[in-house]
Image (cartoon, rainbow, N blue to C red):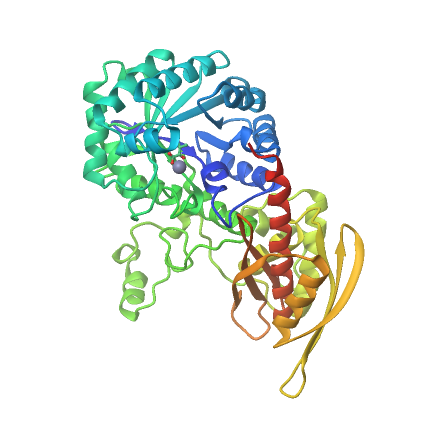
Length: 512
Ligand code: KIV
Ligand code: ZN
């Protein structure tokens, strides 16, 4: 593209995104997302924080071993132990491995969190970059809380880490505090006042606490940043990170005034968003830009009329350009394996033969219960049948009796680590009785924070989808379940959440 500058996309869905409540993923799930990031053609995949836990270490290692194309980054603090551990996982990516090391540079963080003098922080940053350079030429350094850092000190740190060998320097808005004009000025200041700034790529990493992460990232590239850190669906700490799909589509849609482009295959954006929701159980809000279910729905008659006459009247980008294919009836009970596989592939699911067989069997059962099987049913089916390997708790059977004269009673049979267990409980209603029975069998202390149930598609034969938000200790998770029976869907969601809590407890038992 002549005259247009490339902006590198650094995806941190598997690190900053994954560390937020309700979005945790196991190693297999991280690998599935990494494969989709490969299809999206992002430039860098930040796969985790290797020293944080054995699970994080293994996830970064597996991604580094199996995803070939993008650079693979691992986060580490500015300490020898962290950096060594990060490279232990990243070495499998060879020259595509990137060590991403950071330390906070704002007065507030240095004083209260690190309890270090600025000169010590500067020395630690330089030492960390030099150690990382001992392993690889590809080193990114982040000045945590850069936006609240004194500009002269920020410039000093940036110059020093570039001298020490950092090839990318990240200027994060860690707490989502800045606004576009201010961020533009910070990046411009560094461009003008750091003598060796041209020897490194300036990266930006924006959090969305004030809803400005995407706008701030756009301002930063206008000021000269060459890399943007973002996540699918904008997931991430607190209010999230810069949303990858929004940032990428802004550059594509406003080429007329923004002379920048990315390598992202935008037709893979919708599949990426759906896959992430399927994997984590966290859905995006319906009016979310680019990937919300209403993003391309024209409700008002006057809009519908306009779009029918000429699409560009109300559409600034086409649904096809973000990979949204017609959400029509796709499959029914006479559909064959080939059509089933083709549709799953179009939706972004690459299943092994074994997983495909499992999913196809379930599809046949579902198609007997429902006349029409929609894309949303397929998402739920893949989530239920494929994305939940080797879980501690599994639902075997559930029977519920209830009615206006009956006390609701649930009889639930589970497998716990492969062993069958069964109990019955009474409750205020069928869901209460079911949850009580599961709680008794699993001896769980987890608290139910939120419970929602809805229909996946229209019609009385639609599948019900339940989501629960639960927490135990510091672990908060989202569980999701689907079935043509809403009580069974609720039980599945509850059990899914308990499995996620169990995974998190095991994973972080060894956390530093
Ligand atoms: O928000 C932040 O500052 C971070 C850094 C570790 C890059 O996530
Ligand atoms: Zn962050």
